[in-house]
Image (cartoon, rainbow, N blue to C red; front, top):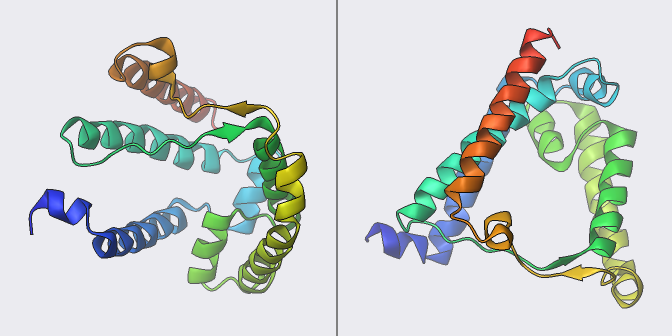
Length: 186
């Protein structure tokens, strides 16, 4: 099977997603962001480990994705959105994050390292939260979720520039922020 054939194979996509998810979880754990104290330190602005790990992941992922896209190995799938759905999603995410001290990615990594609070509070909380959201979704979709709709555009399309004119400066900005945070000892 060719690489292009592998990209279009749904089964292979699922397996690749699982593989990269496991690798991502492993790297989250190795980076120290699956520990409750580190996450709470980030929320209290006393420990910037999460910003450093996620900033480096965003910069690396952005360059990697756009290189793969440049060579035709991946496609971009941008969804339309709305202010309402972002506000509701942010409130749900923030509430769970603030109450438990984990986001969905770090809760999976914490379960993998054996953290019982993540297993019982996080996984059960994710299941209950998903169930509640699924039940109230019809009412939300008729009222607030579609307010302030915006098209499925990305910054290079909006600015009408080549994507690398956005990727390079944004990556440089992330690197500068990470260097400043590190130099300040945060």
